[in-house]
Length: 133
Image 1: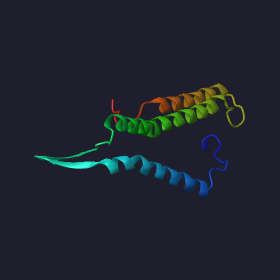
Image 2: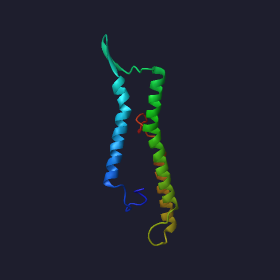
Image 3: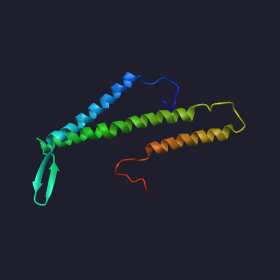
Image 4: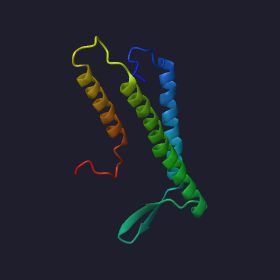
């Protein structure tokens, strides 16, 4: 919303600190099971670190589903909603300033910016995707 309303007051310092603390607590909670259950086993010629879950079929699956949702899906949905709001605002809003002879050119440029924003937000980006073509 800072892009749409740049001068509108945002979160207070206290609220910002609470959000930061919540993010860190969530990160520690998500990492804790791996730290708690991890084991190091020395084999001939190598050392292996692995996670022997108490109930391997159920625990590992649920942990990875929860992590995938909280780390990947939730931010993806939030970004999608945010970019949709920004795109709709850019697409439908009036061009600031006086109308000029080049109104249609300005309108095309504004819509091109909105389209570029949508393209940027929908382009897959993950640690495994390559940015080089």
